[in-house]
Length: 187
Ligand code: FES
Image (cartoon, rainbow, N blue to C red; front, side, top):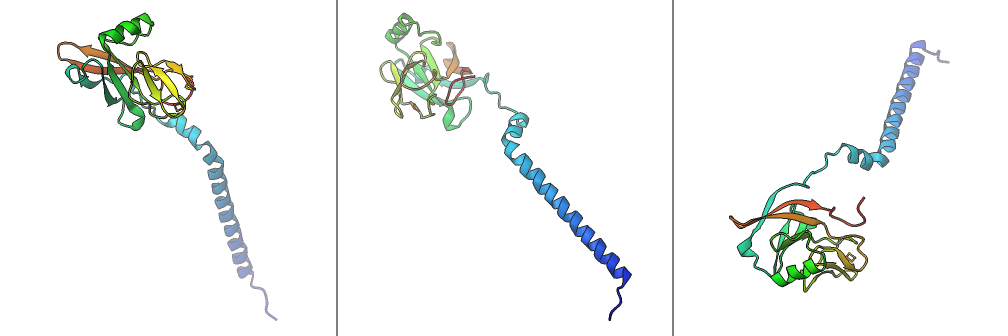
């Protein structure tokens, strides 16, 4: 019959306390991670510095490269697909038509520019034809003159790129954006 060694018992007890403590710490760590994970997007939303590109000035073309009746594709305010935009040089007849329809607000020296990503479900719109810019995905049409919705499901106009035309140098500059790129109504 073997006698119990008190030192061994103490050691066993210490080991078991240690492993219980380790397990509890591990368990609490996992719980903390699992609690935070669902809120990660919210945390990111509050702590990520938002890109402020609403007033970035960018040269987008020269007048001589975009004669009346043509469209120049450019990217603004960044280089991603969602930044694809049209700079349209309207003919005199089109400017007159836009004025008659009350849609000349964003036309500067015959030029108008806007983002081309549909505000319905973000399909890229096609090059303008006649007085329309068409989104082929669900059959929507936007006005070529002010990007307002003519028909179809989009809830709002395409975002306007505000422009300045420097007649001495011939440069056309993008100076900002009215409206947000993407789908849905603006808040
Ligand atoms: S994505 Fe343009 S109409 Fe639906």
